[in-house]
Length: 127
Image 1 (cartoon, rainbow, N blue to C red):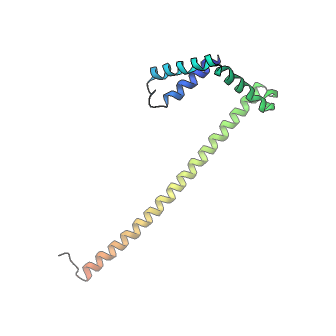
Image 2 (cartoon, rainbow, N blue to C red):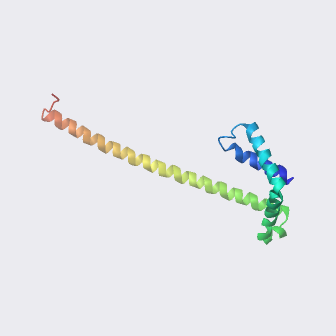
Image 3 (cartoon, rainbow, N blue to C red):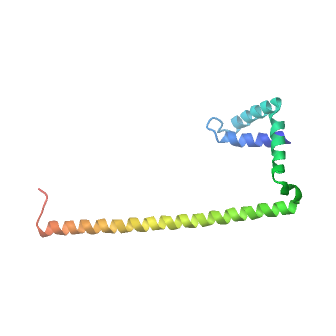
């Protein structure tokens, strides 16, 4: 089971690299990598590491499935709300930058209009 999970993870990581862009090359590379890891005992080490990772957080052992699912849903909701807030703040910043650029353009336009009217008033022409 761990071999399959690791295989899927390696396939997805390899798809990100330019050499393994195609599906079949990523599958072949992932098979080779996962097989080598299995032969050297890397999969067993990875499984023990990730299964033992929960021991760092003792409360995970005391929680039931419902509590863990609720915590994951709560975390996902918090991240979604934070992402939405950051998106709104980014839009406000972009709007502020656009308003500043519009004011700068109006100022430059007024200066160019003034220079053009001065050219006409004093009869400066191109020769």
